[in-house]
Image 1 (cartoon, rainbow, N blue to C red):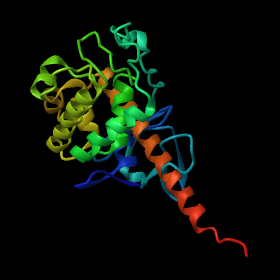
Image 2 (image 1 turned 180 degrees about the vertical axis):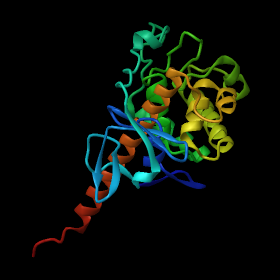
Image 3 (image 1 turned 90 degrees about the vertical axis):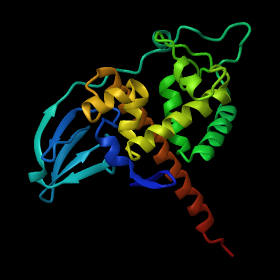
Image 4 (image 1 turned 60 degrees about the vertical axis):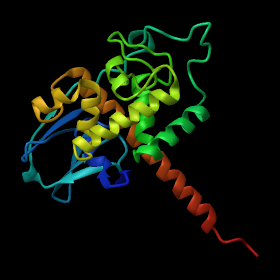
Length: 249
């Protein structure tokens, strides 16, 4: 499956997500001969090839020749996303009673930022969900603020004067994610890892750093991204089908 994450490059979303457990439950870790690791829900031998199912659905899979796979091992379920109480210290206050935007308001802000920076709107929505759950007043224990959880120093560099203002926060976070996508040649997994742990950590390990929090974060965002992409494509198919059905005389 291909998706235009940015107007410049076509990304294989399924393949990118496979590197970091896109499935709701990743039960197996696969080591490939080329050195890559990926996680899948389960696997099966189909017509002499190994089919790795990326979720419990039978139509969502990647396929390899047996010689391309070095090892298959069981892994525990990924940890659940942290709760709002665990992630957020500052929440809605009487002065800010509506910290969580309506879906329509948030969608409008994300669409605007998507067009300005040529970054897929579903990727932005997935980052916002993982970072703040849509709470514009969210503050992490590390001090990151707002919808896309900008650190004060990063926000200042991006020209964001108030990280609690949704449009400023999303514009700054999208600009930063755009910079990371360019830096890592549109490798979504690396860009997300750098967004979470910093580019220095990604450069140090030449890939996703071995931090449990970062790996879980990247897996969570890509899983949500894939879910949104599949929903978008299903809606498009339904729209085409409704137009294509001939009217009865």
